[in-house]
Amino acid sequence: MRSRTIGVSVLATTALFGLTTACLPGGGGKAADVGRAARAAEQASNGATPSPTAKNKDKSTGVLADLSGAEILSQSYEAMRKVESAHVVAKVREKGKPMEFELSLDKKGSCNGVIRYEGMGRMNLVKSTDLIHFKGDEDYWRGAAAQEHTPKKQVDAMVAMLADRWLKVPLSDPRAASMAHVCDLGKLTGGSGRANPLARKGETVTIDGNQALAITTAAKEGTETDYIATQGTPYMLKSTVSGDETGEILFSAFGTPVDTALPDGADVLDLSKLGGGVPGESV
Figure 1 (tube, rainbow, N blue to C red):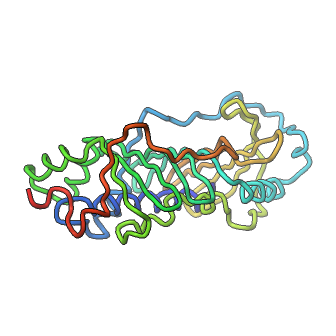
Figure 2: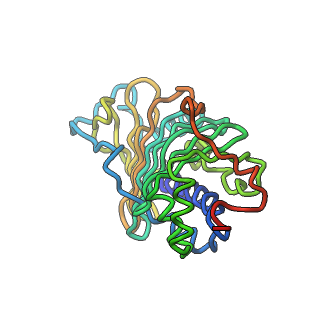
Figure 3: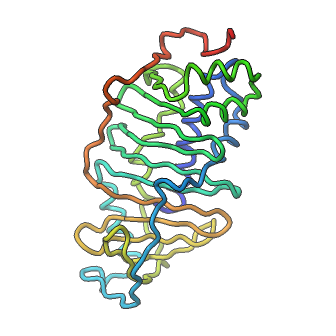
């Protein structure tokens, strides 16, 4: 939601990458390396977000028809601040490199979903109020190891142990400290407090079968467009930024509880029981 929201999304996934690199042989990487790795992302075909369709140049939108763009945004900001849970799909491009994630999350800090990085496969994430579970595929772990220039023998051993296996770490663990905001719904829906008085109403479009009104404002990065539901609660269904940096984020499933249960029979490695060691460092 707004360029600030998309920026928060980038920071959240940066924190997640920082946690997983702590599992690599020899420990994590330098902050600059982690930042570069987190900005690298995959424009995956799975979970691709839909483009607005069925454009209608008739701006009649029911109860919103007589409101200004700023008034509509103010109502939407207030509605989003009250959301207790939602499903979020984001595609962000920073410095020309894409990243993508899809999460269900709530204001208690719980979330469940998947994050994809360019050239690094995918990572599944389940976070409850006191535990984090994450699972990377082989491409993810090899990509993470490449960022640390890990020798091939160690990488192969690490992949054999960790690929497609759930890892668990309590939030009290120092390695999870940077995860404080990765599933923070409040950061995504809190808004900036005040709507831009120059916000301008645009066309009515359809997003996932729901009618929405486009509201456009100027942003530091370029042009920001928010799509506000015109029926029922004026939730923000989609927000985009175009210009020097691009990105989009979609919201749905408002109020739906987040499932933080792992699949039955999941093979889980408890990182808190590994002490100061890391998988593969003695190989």
